[in-house]
Image (cartoon, rainbow, N blue to C red; front, top):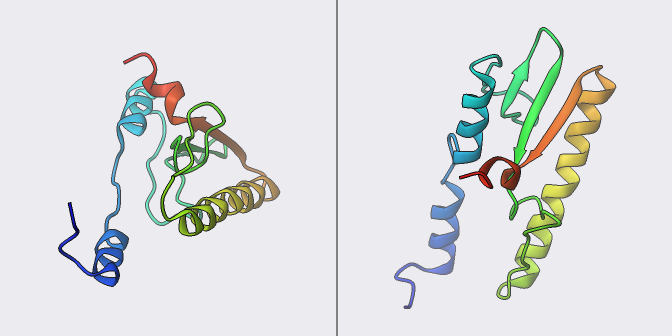
Length: 118
């Protein structure tokens, strides 16, 4: 089916979409029984923070962070996706490094580790 929007309009529309709480994040929240704070506006946008123990938790999606188990490379628009996914991985490393240098423990959980039991 042909898209009814121009490429520029579709790109703008997609850029405005922001996930709030994903299923894997909600699963982890229920498992932790509210022990952690879900911040807004923190550097790197961690999914959960434990200020008392100086821990940040990121729930990494299998597609967006190139999970070694489930990631399948997109077959179309390869140049865009390669650049986008590479930037995601670089940013993940920079954010983790910044927290570690500041004395925080960084935990990264793959989405599939939380949803396999469903």
